[in-house]
Structure formats: structure tokens, C-alpha cells
Length: 122
Image (cartoon, rainbow, N blue to C red):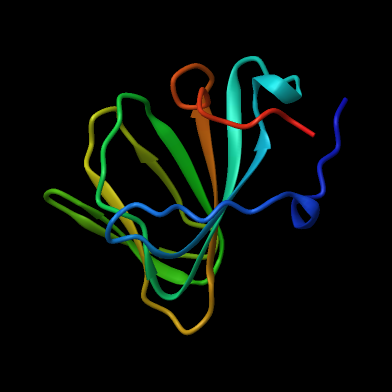
């Protein structure tokens, strides 16, 4: 069994074009004993957004707090506390904070390519 205190984990700040006000923390992955999935915590500051992107793995999102939207090629979903979303492999998507507080959400990804570029665990 493993216990992680998310508030003690290092935050990464992606520098991709069009990304602003985003912090990411890796909470679980293969290096920490989770062989099948990785777990990330995202915080998107007020007015912030991730880059519009796609990748070859699915991921599940669960919103902890705040308000925003998940933008796809043909659809935009509102995001709020207790919203769960599945992004399929290859789907273009972007997260944007539309509220007046940070948008916080968890992302679950499969192990493998989705978790390869992570630094060694503490």
C-alpha cells in the first residue's frame, strides 16, 4: 500500500505554446508501484488553459473544484465539481478555466507511453 500527499509533490509547469497557468503533479505511476495506470493532479489558474493537443491513449478526468470547459474539435463540455469525462485516444482536447477560482482535476492514464517521460520517483 502507498500513501501520497499531493500537496507535498513537486509541481511541473508545462511550457507548451498556448499553455498558461497550468501546474501538474504526478501522484502515481509505474515508478511508484502502479503498474497499470498513472494518476496526475492538474491545477489551471483563473484565465489559464492547456494547449490544444491529442495523443494515442485514453484518459479519464474527474473535476475536484472550480469551473471550466473541455474543448474538442466538434464539442465543448462544461466542467464543474464532480464532473467526470473520458477523452478517447486521438481526440483533440484542451482544458480552459472559465471560473473565478483555480480549476483542479485528476487525470488517470494507462501506463506505458502516457507515463514514459516522468522523472524518477522520490
